[in-house]
Image (cartoon, rainbow, N blue to C red):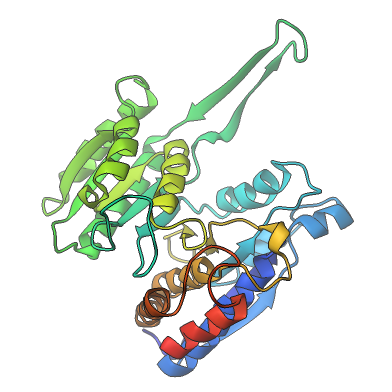
Length: 358
């Protein structure tokens, strides 16, 4: 840890309960910075549904360049009931991922102590793996179109795009991450794809995976078809150490992962640009949950977990681990449930409990 470095964070509280969970994550950041002896500064940005309804823009001109000046971005949530689906997701979230080349989506799937899972007989020792999802290619590139739209003869096409560069940099990062994670049960990286049907793009993924694997003899290379992965994640989640996968499949299996780790209220993730000078974005996975806005009942654990990830990946790993350890004390000993309104304490109280456990 570089105690002399001041951590600069752009904060996008967003919509609904986003600002509430963000406030608790920042509360924990303030406390751990004092304990660990580093300084930080934040700047708020009002991007989200309210701004879009007010101005008609998702990201103003120059916003991406402004955000690049920060060490990291912390996002609470975006999603507004008065904004049509897709506008904020494409115009804000995907725009930032693509423009800032956040080509790694990192999703820890970790069952915390005291958190219930729908998987009978499984506990924290069984559910502890990480999904590395490629984040800038595949079907999300927006290649496609319509022919004869709104007629009986309508045709719609949507093309997936894969590049050797895009595959290789994600796969290589995943191998390096698996080596660094150093799972005591054995370092294993599982490629999840569908090579038996998607015989062009996923063949490129397969061949690239085999090529890069030769450079990491200490990491066991492994492969699952995506449908088999969905079965094994439910039946034997302890099988996995690190998964690397495509953008679309990663989008799907990480939601399955969130459910087996106890729900969206505990799931956190990062959109990472690992390159020197790159700016990454960290967020809870649960969405804006507008029906709970202002009631002090939403669970901030996922947001605090996202702050732990931010610290880990921006040069403060000891502080990040300290936050993660405190989260597990609170879930294991202080909370009745992870569901909104059933936690046994309010949103702000959960933040206070994590601070107390640091």
